[in-house]
Image (cartoon, rainbow, N blue to C red; front, side, top):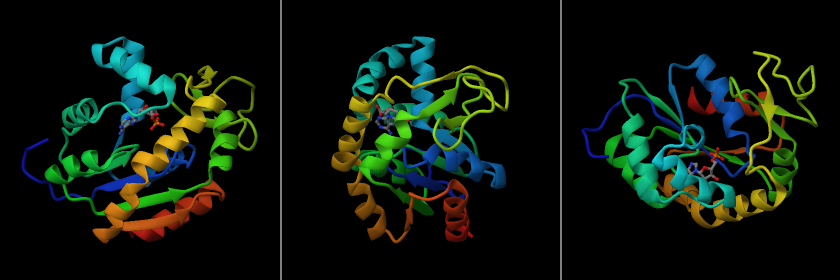
Length: 213
Ligand code: AMP
């Protein structure tokens, strides 16, 4: 990442697994003209297409470990191809990634959605995702009308392979060790807003809206 800096509004959603980053990202892009860039989504697409990157990334993802920084930074660089602002979801996840990002663009706001490990395990064990449109459901508090079928597009729902309890625990530990330092990194830059993630998605979205307006 080494081209000139851009000046549009750029937002980062930071939070451990299950914090609700994907759910909030969909709500944010409905109301703001931002390009949603989810490194997890891009990686899952690479895995399902069987690309070299996908094959390499898969072993890390299946264990709940982070994919190495060089691969992620190169992948993000290729996706930064539009002029207006970005909503980063799941990136950066390490200080090195954050430093690479700040070389190419100004980060205006970082929303840190905070939830406990117990809540993460509870939510992610019940998470199901539409294989067609990516809509996110929860079998406890946001069920689809018909079991296994997406309300929006009738696509088939599936459980992510890394949403198994033992992998979720490792993802959470990985977050604490490698990504939590980003909270201090962005607080020092004066752009961090911390939000309690253990509430209804709409209440969290209201906080986010207030923080960025
Ligand atoms: P997510 O969908 O954001 O939960 O990401 C799923 C998995 O993809 C993570 O557990 C990591 O293995 C990998 N991943 C996603 N984003 C990153 C990133 N920025 N850095 C390293 N690994 C990532």
